Image: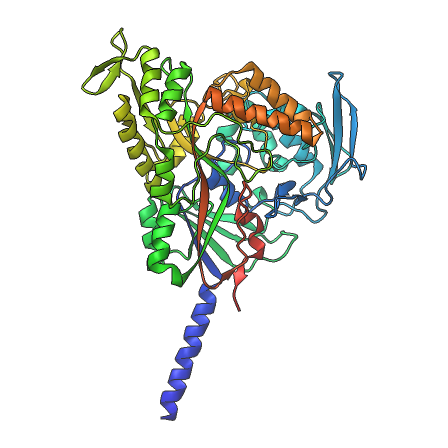
Length: 552
């Protein structure tokens, strides 16, 4: 009996030890694999989610939507003297903003994160052939001064209301990538060590670093020995990529993964259904925020150049039914890209309800009045037909596509669905404007974020600028360009609010995109995991991964 008791106790100890060891390893499921690991090239949420565990931006909107320092030590303001208005070379009012890098911030190979890295990053961003996404930031930051190894001053040619927000200025390691860039700037995006040597310790300075990459399958993170902040709990974080959202759910139930990231996981309809069946076994979090599902229209397509066609398309969609029937009303219809949660939102914009009759009249006026087998043609014999694309394997997007296809068919519009893996869709098709008609995806933004990169005519990606910029629609509107520039430099909140309202009116009138709905992210977490704090904006939960732990 005594021997049996000892055996049972030993077994319990082993089981408890195994459980404790297992909780030192966290397996996260997401749906996309990055097209690149370079922090400043291409905009893809999968990359942001992974890199946010391995790096820290200088500034960030925290979970309470307040601008804070991360890589810097103190947020510069005009009041504390670290930001000083000055006259820019163009004769306009600019500003010099001084930041100090965290004194203990070191790359994973021990080299200090320094002002030299800042200058290199700025040099890459300023080069017209580098292919970075945030072109406007680098155009405005016309000069950078290294005060010392850890302190630098950025000189901007405009004094904007967000003068100290440099969230998108992701510092690069000069000691690893500068020589590569200097040899061939136009080829840098294909030769950067972020993609040719992704596990190099010297690329990372956050709580974790990337230790293993299996393309399209998973990324393994391990603690970064040089991290200056709170020591992360998990000895290993595995980010598994499961492109099919139904398979992602199955992997969670089987125990192959511990959690599904709400930043890039299953969709709200799946989460609601999952919660009804298995919610008691997990912590379910639904977070509404500044995530905007929409359809980019390629305005180089002659059919889409006609605003009447664009308006007919949005009037031909029952977006309210999509919201209520597919998402239980948790993802409200979007009238523009500005969420009602943001203080700059206005209701005073054109509202397009589902109206097939009105949509049909618009198409008749545009010359698409001849019907053959239910599809509209013009007098030249051209068919009113478009290709609709999105990320393959995303069950909700594919379902929405089918709804759109069916509803637009009632209007006499033919829709041909052609989806691609996210890595191809975002890495080439959208970025290089290869889609011919409609591209459905989401934009994630910060509070009061000026969408200059996505709407200003100077930011249309071209071969000449190495596909920099994010104006994938090719939208060109002089008043919109002016408004985007005015909003940035208007410091008076009341006056800026009026500009924002006019912005939304133009957006809803011109319809460079078809707004669909504002997304709510669904986080499915194990009961034992603590510290995961959704933000509702573009700051992913992994920016605070060092706070994640195991419930005692």
